[in-house]
Length: 152
Image (tube, rainbow, N blue to C red; front, side, top):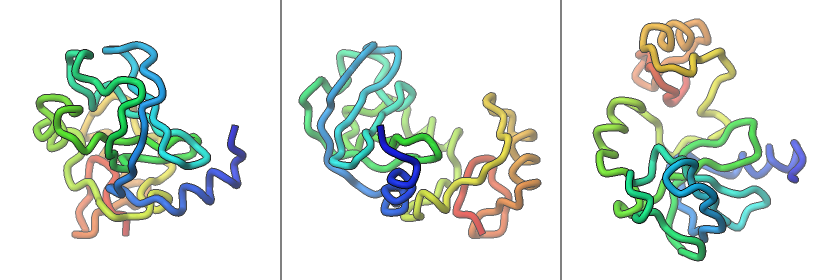
């Protein structure tokens, strides 16, 4: 297990949207959980089931080497990833992204891209916007986003 300080140092070197080559190491519950990726860092990577195609037969299998983008990293010692290859993404990815992550930043250090606030687990735009506004979060365009943006 990686210590807190080691994880903080590793996280500082990551940027949202940064591409990493990785190897699929585990697919524990095809169609239900997600996949684990070795990205050559002291912590592993993980692709959430929400980003993967609905038929698990289209998921990359153990041993598959592919490109991934840094999707998220927070206090948990794990890098959340998004597959670069469209064949490994959910079929409606672009529509899903527009609905759930509008104005999502790219090329922002991950340790600057999130705030510690009680964001509801269920996406209720009014609640999320209120929480982010209370935390002082605005996009680089000065607007309050309903998801984490490039914080000012």
